[in-house]
Length: 245
Image (cartoon, rainbow, N blue to C red; front, side, top):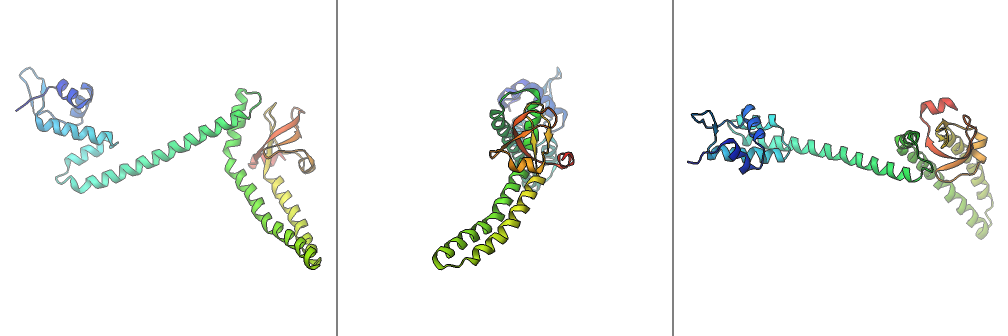
């Protein structure tokens, strides 16, 4: 029957000698015998066991789980449980890594819009990314609540032109004006702006916000800290930002 030294079994399994010694120390790969000189010698069965250990380690199973598996009289009773647990762990890790990947991609996209990059710009990006979903949700809320109002508007215009039902347009106006005011107030309460020069997060007055030139992501405002007047990045206002308003 073949006997293998630590180095030989390590080479056959594609691992380091230290790995084989580690499994010995953990009690999951004890050598069949020791030579007269005290060298560890492994049998064919030990080699098979080592390959099983390596296979399970490649699947991501921790040493403690592998040790528990070998300690069972009927390992088939727990192998499916161990594999299912490892599957859940790997899915969670995959989800976390995917979230980090999406965060990195988001940072790269935001960097492209930074005119003059500095260390402080990282803080601006972090602020933008932190509440990006909340800002998108707020905008969608405004859009969705406006759909019925818009539908009523076009319906009233068409019926006025085709059937002379002018009163429906009046109904729309009575609905649209309060809705417009409510949406404007809602919007103002939930947004703040970042000055690209001094990186101050601030809330302008309602009037300045309402009348200023804007793009989907920026608005031309005057920073209350440094006095710069220009486009500022729109972000979702957290509690601290709201308190500054």
